[in-house]
Image (tube, rainbow, N blue to C red; front, side, top):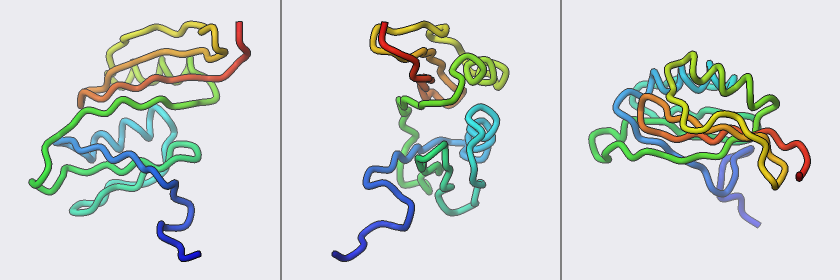
Length: 123
C-alpha cells in the first residue's frame, strides 16, 4: 500500500487558524507540554502527546475558526491550573464523570475550547 501521510501522523489532523499563531503555540507548550515550534509562513506542527495539531494564520486565505478539542493528559487538575495561569477562562472546573474521565474545560484567548481529561475509572 502506498503511504499517503507523513510518518507519525494520524489520518485526521486538526488544524487551527488564528490571528496570532505564535502565541497559541506558546500557550500549547506551556499548558500541554506540547512539542514543536512556530514557523513563520508555514503551519506549525505541534505534538500534544501522541497527536499532531497544525497551527497557522491561514495565510490571509482563511479566517480564524475556533476549535473544540478533547485532550487526554496525565493530570487534568494540574493542566487545568496551567491553562488558567496562561490566561484561559474556566468553563468547567475539574469533575469526575460517570464514564471514568476526570475532566475540566477552558477557553483560550483565541476562542478555542479545550476539554482536558484524565481517564480514571467509571463511577
